[in-house]
Length: 116
Image (tube, rainbow, N blue to C red; front, side, top):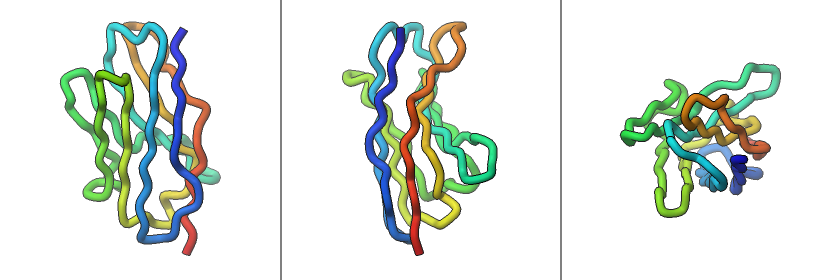
């Protein structure tokens, strides 16, 4: 059983920054990738940023240059830092972990609201 616990988020002013963290517990081996997705109001869930087992990173075009994903292996933690937040960054952010051939594991989601 894998659990993902997210923290961070909340209300942020446009132009500001945020830091989201996600800690995984349980049997997460063999680890494939861990990252963040978001669901904006009225839209499908989309990838924001992801880091795989080789530390290769993938970013959505909309956050490229504004987001950094990092991973602390010792804590089974992945961190997403974003700056210059825009109104379009508003949404529910979900942590995702992929391990082995299992379906992806998801966190419960954390709300990020960017205000003008």
